[in-house]
Picture 1 (tube, rainbow, N blue to C red):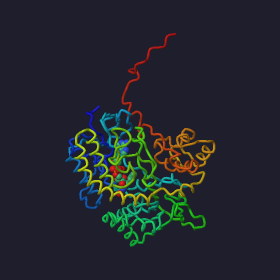
Picture 2: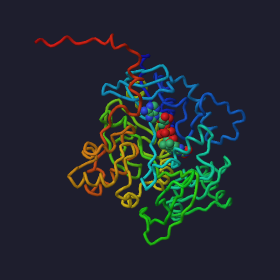
Picture 3: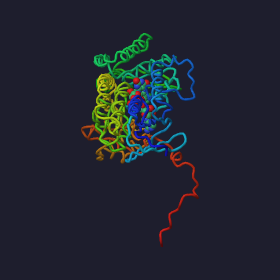
Picture 4: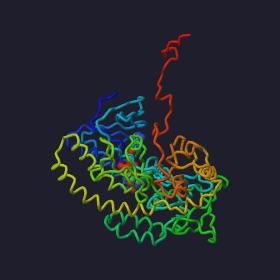
Length: 478
Ligand SMILES: Cc1cc2nc3c(=O)[nH]c(=O)nc-3n(C[C@H](O)[C@H](O)[C@H](O)COP(=O)(O)OP(=O)(O)OC[C@H]3O[C@@H](n4cnc5c(N)ncnc54)[C@H](O)[C@@H]3O)c2cc1C
């Protein structure tokens, strides 16, 4: 066990970074832990350590902002533990991670959960085929490896990442066969007043759309993927019109396009596994992406010593994540007695004003990528919904017919959500299917969180040992 920090921050994205900087200004010993090779999280993702970018000007504004944030963190004096995958957190706040040197543990006085979000992909026939990839996953490939997801790519789903990814593919020399957005132009116009609060981001998004149009990329609004099929070395993808709830319009004609790969994503879901593992209260907030921890205005959860910020506390984007992280850090310092209430109030007041603006922008973006119930209604019985355990919608419905009353009972009966991803991929869809019977997502419930929080090999935890060295218990008396 290495030296215990006073506060451990799980996640080095904008939220975790904000918390680390705030804690450093209050003289609190903080340790920021992340599975990545450096700080930045999803938006400001660093290049792998072995990469030497040379002229970094082509890597774009997110990379440059990431470099700035990484310098700030290095100058702050906060402790860092990169390349560490946190796989368990005990009720005594013992944090277990697996790092390059093997298992590591810390026992901090408090934890700031800043674990970000998980991508949502609503299942359709063919979604598990090779060549089909998440939209947010594609940003990892593009940013971290500077690799295109294919040479001819069909980009589909909803939200701002659609246009960001399509633009990055074009910029990298790839062809975008089409962009299919579940939202219509009306939904984007509706979001405009909230987006005006962050004009730089608005302009950036508008320029992505305008550039794609100018380059002749077909932009298919109110369209969704109906099916993907393997065709030669690539894919054949059927698209069709959808209604405002994302439900396929049966009478609408289908378009079939060929592509090397299909990049598809339907928004983001807050990553709340750590918070749920610690038994903190969660509430369902569709507008924030799903289940989120119940927090007070200072980012405290219902469990003493546990704070949360960023997309993991409700999807609101990078700017809001950073500001909420700073408030969480100031609050943890207050609770440790390092600053007084006056200091906390003075430091957080300007952050709260900026946070309100950033959240307005984030909420408008989150609405564009919110789950559309009609999409889930349209999932056919023979479509796999839990890809880890190969459970189809029909099997889920059959368990509900037999009386499964919530998502956890369903999990025990079908193994749905029990695979290596621990329900991160299927949880939202299954929750919606169960809610159609129970009447609400609250009644359908949230998966019970279990360690390991992320898949890892048991051999890595066990390390090297000799069977002969295992102490044998004494035999029971005859
Ligand atoms: C795959 C993906 C790609 C995205 N790409 C973009 C993009 O290109 N542009 C954009 O504007 N928004 C993107 N987003 C949205 C973006 O994540 C947020 O808006 C913003 O980064 C939120 O900041 P955060 O600090 O809350 O979380 P994040 O930036 O997601 O940071 C969370 C950090 O926690 C770490 N972490 C989580 N769990 C563990 C664990 N168990 N052990 C160790 N480390 C852990 C992760 O490695 C990550 O670095 C993406 C989201 C996802 C899920």
